[in-house]
Amino acid sequence: MEGNGGGRLVVTELSHIKELVKQLEVHLGGGSPDLCKHLTSQIFTVTERSIGIIRSCQFDGHHRKRAAGDLESATPSPLSDVSDLPFKATKKRKASMEKKRQQIRVSSTGGVENPPIDDGHSWRKYGQKEILGAKHPRGYYRCTHRNSQGCLATKQVQRTDEDATLFDVIYHGDHTCNHQKTAAVAGKPQPEMDTNAARNRLHDLSSGLKVKTELPRQDSWNAMPFCLSSPVSGLAPPERHPFSAPSTPENYCLLGGGVPSASPATSDSNHLSAVAGATPFPVAGDAEWRGAEFQEVVSALVAATATVAAPPPAMDADECFEFDPDFTIDISSFFA
DNA sequence: TAAATTTGACCTAC
DNA sequence: GTAGGTCAAATTTA
Image (cartoon, rainbow, N blue to C red; front, side):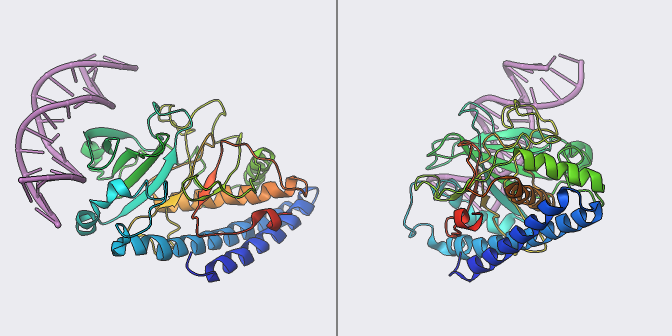
């Protein structure tokens, strides 16, 4: 994050969220559904704004610098360069050929043997290539409906060098097919979500989420874990692994991507990083969808704080979100 | 048997 | 010339 301006803004917004959550907590007990809905809506809005700030700062301060040619000169940290190294050789080429590109990082807690996540689309692998300087080959996937519907969406999946459970996924192009498996079931925000459904969902998320407040390990991909655990009903059965399971709407892992209205990062790599762990949230090439989903998750996460006692809540070790390392917020004090 | 994956060859940008 | 990206035939899988 460039300077601390963005960070302060985010803290301000999160403080706002905190207040809204407190209000929501009060009204959840017996307040009017409309008021709860209103509060939820406000939380969504503020959260989205925060995400936008985070994303724009991340893009401006981190990736633009890299795109400007800092890759070679940047001081390498053991993990921070993991994702970019295998891709940097394609930067120039990509810049000239890509209309839309989104890069995310996902993890597979199921081990190195598990394939990368299912992201709600049907993909067909059409190639694999050893990449210079990378330990693992890069897989090339295109939309299954390329032929039938002319969907030109593609993605590249590559295991990171340092952590074989992490994958870098680059999405190219938009899906024009009508076969998104995930939209309805996986929680793609409906234009008008039923009030009860929204409440139930909030409750579900709240009951299952915990917020990790500890600071990141230095070796954790140079990013601050922002973790949550979730047996989230309606999203995925907990026993199902998001990376090893077949392509079903339940298998998701929300990681990043664009919040279109808030981020300028659509012209190049959107590299909002996250470690999905066992948290089955969506990943998709659709920036709007991911942004909204992310927003929902963060909202749920915030909501969860209302259900957790004042001390910093405990945290399952294997379920994390990660924010950009430059984005530093003392969450433990924030939620205390 | 259709669909998906693998893999060597080919194409193209740099 | 090199490396990344794609093609397409062969092979595997459901």
